[in-house]
Length: 103
Image (cartoon, rainbow, N blue to C red; front, side):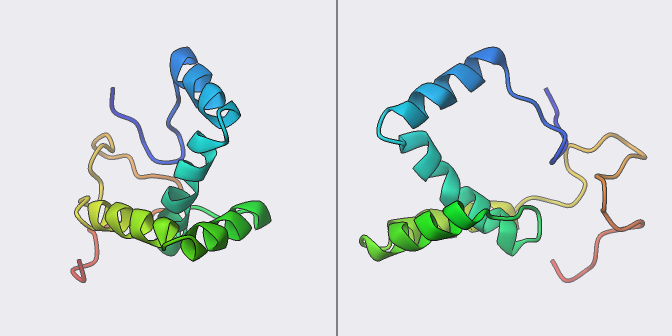
């Protein structure tokens, strides 16, 4: 199932397992924080105050947050503009026209 950033959905089971993962020592939440940090550095997400705090805490403990973020940013750097977007459609807020050649 193709999804567009910002308009994606999760299944009932994905929501269930995420909540269960958050209950279990916050593991799912702490995995999400470096992902949102990486997305925020691309201008695709905004971290809440709590997420900023926990990202710093994760970085303090052996750099776990930073190392998780770098892997995610590497994957994001390999995503091609418009991939997964239906022909003629652009994500909300995306610039019109072809992608910049700076990639």
